[in-house]
Length: 108
Image (cartoon, rainbow, N blue to C red; front, top):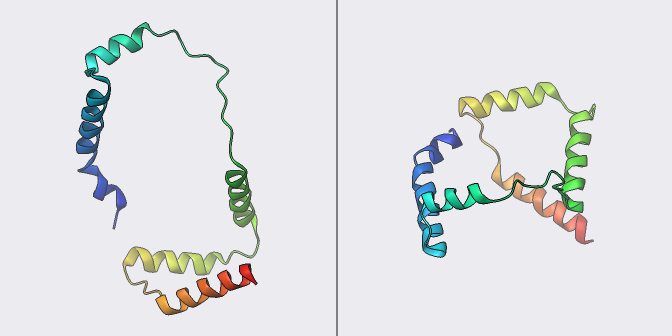
């Protein structure tokens, strides 16, 4: 199943909903907003983005996992093929048991 297909039909609805909400909050239509934004001064080129410690840790974890030699490319390719073919049947009981075991390791 392609996630994009689920949301593609809703995109215009969601945008229309956002526009209506903005008009209700500000009382301005698109043309009034565009005129107002045209009058604004250009934004500063010194904008800054700060990432949380959790985001930095996540990025580091992803890079480490991607560069790890322990990744079994053959198994990953086989699982990917099963998912694409719709034949992948995960064992939900085993997954739940593993999740609980990991949680217990954290708290003990």
